[in-house]
Image 1 (cartoon, rainbow, N blue to C red):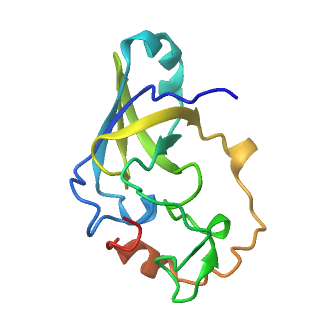
Image 2: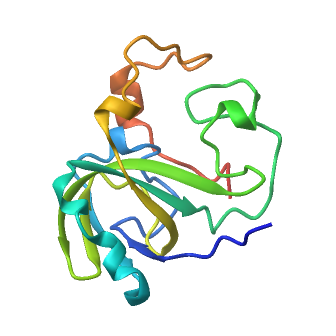
Length: 158
């Protein structure tokens, strides 16, 4: 099996898990940056032509794994794979953020909902022709856009 090692570190204004936005939709005003390890700097070539990118990262503060969790936008236990909970077996997170600019080994972004100091696993471009799904269902998640935007984290996934 291939070992996944961080390629950099995510920097954000979120210094504590408590009261963080739970998704990028609730973090639209927050700006941060990713510092990519120098040995990967050449991989950032041509990234600045995209408006949005995926950040894949390690939920490094998650201390346990649960197969059933009560997600932030619900009051019922759900299977972890039907949620965005950090308590998944591999503790991998994903966020789509707006790309502001790339300067050297720093990638500046907006809409960051990630804890400061989080290990970065990968960056991928958001490509509308590949990634946009017009007619989709969101399963149990019935919260309004406003509810998602205003929801903040608590200690339940520590």
